[in-house]
Amino acid sequence: MLVQKVKYVLWAADYQRCLHFYRDLFGGTITMEREVWSEIIIAGATIGVHGGVEGKRTWTGLSFQLDDLRAGIARLTECGGALTAEPNDTPEDPLHLAMCIDTEGNEFMMTQSRH
Image 1 (tube, one colour):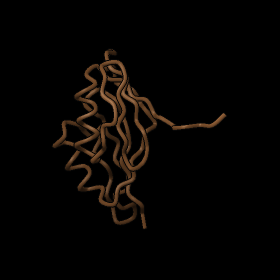
Image 2 (tube, helix red, strand yellow; image 1 turned 30 degrees about the vertical axis):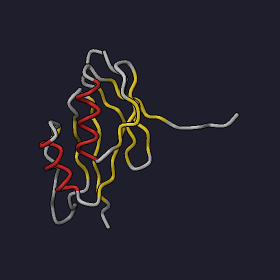
Image 3 (cartoon, rainbow, N blue to C red; image 1 turned 135 degrees about the vertical axis):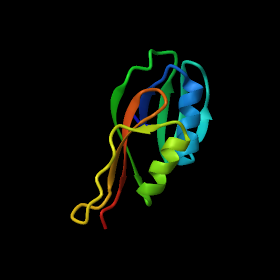
Image 4 (spheres, rainbow, N blue to C red; image 1 turned 45 degrees about the vertical axis):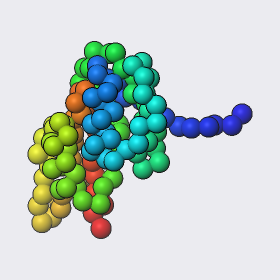
């Protein structure tokens, strides 16, 4: 047996809105687009989008490490997403983690290395 691909699945009431959110936010490449199942590749990882579901708010466990978290947060809101809470930024604990929500209610993290 040979594993061909590992996919992470998100649920979406509107699969096109979900795909376009991740494409626009992270520069992903949509490789398959169908109402029931679609796929987008971001930084070499495949995210499957299962369309036609309720779109309830759901924690995904998904995390994206960025080189500039502040730019990511600004882009998040431009693309229709939101923060679930404002991230902390103190001299003792520099900004490195943002809890986010996409257009379909999927919660994810954006992080930045603490250097």
